[in-house]
Amino acid sequence: MSKYNTIAVIYGSDSSEWEISCRSGEFTASRIDGTKYNVYEIFARFGRWSLAAFRKRNSVRTILPENCRPEIDKTDFSVTLNGEKVKFDFAYIMQHGTPGENGLMQGYLEMLGIPFSSCSSFVSTITFDKFTCKNYLRNVDYVKCADDVFIRQDEVTPGLGDKVISALGLPLFVKPTDGGSSFGVVKVKQADEFEGAVKTAFSEGRTVIAEQFIPGRELTNAVYFNGKELVALPVIEIVTEHEFFDYDAKYNGFSEEICPARISGELTARIQEASRKIYRRLGCSGLVRVDYILSGDDLYFLEVNTIPGMTSASLVPKMVRTAGMDITDFLTEIIENS
Image 1 (cartoon, rainbow, N blue to C red):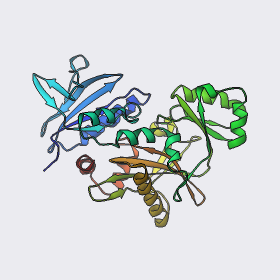
Image 2 (image 1 turned 180 degrees about the vertical axis):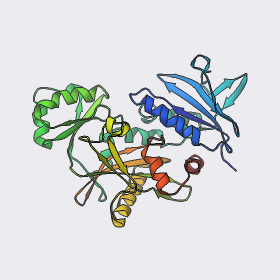
Image 3 (image 1 turned 30 degrees about the vertical axis):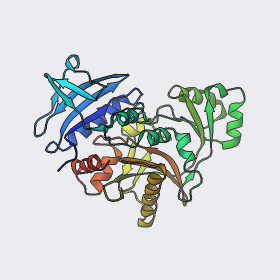
Image 4 (image 1 turned 90 degrees about the horizontal axis):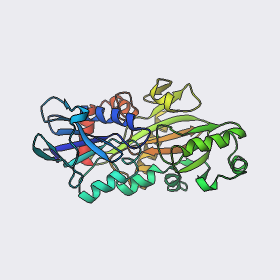
């Protein structure tokens, strides 16, 4: 018997990733087991939360026109539909970026006592900030972290580029400390590109890091809790035609995502164990995806995604299919054990 009756899938966001979030949310809602749960889809952007669609148990999905979408009552996380008040007893968060990935949505749900699919508000906050997250992992023996320089807006002064390049060398990456889908990320190959890269990164976030370039192979691996143990899914290798795995490479077909990765069984096990250790060290829950660079024999941590993409073409569904699992059964495991 299921622990929950009525699932709210929350998508849309206040960030540049909001359209991707909608695609992830709609896919997730469509794959949640309709024989076990009532599924309600909430579009949430800039404080306005409304019911976009719903699918009652053993029924077809009903899409609501934009001008007829009832507002979500945030006092108790409910909606009134056709005169009936519906309270949601579980939230599946599919918001990429703020407020779903930086802990704000989790904090709201925690205050109401409503279970949800992702990491806690605290863990979501620290993992969403790339600089903070790396500081939790700098001294472990199972991954390395590239050298970096943390930058606030008022620290952008003449000569900063020279200092950063002297410390990190060229090429290097400049990126917002928060955010995803590679928005605001620039690979700097020449010194005169640094100032423009910093401006681009600040257009997407309030703080920025410049990070040492680590040549190597990009690998990614997802981990989740199945109620008994941490399960690491198959590893994917990402090969892109671009300078790095940027937005265009991610979503417009300019990359090859090889699953399982063309690496040895020993290396696969090493990466999967590193992912489980990172999950435990950061205090994660639900499903997370960890990104790496393999440089020679060294495994470098890139970032952790606590709300990984979930469209039919996304990385995690590919891992699930390669593992021989059904995506609906997989989502049920996430819901029942988060």
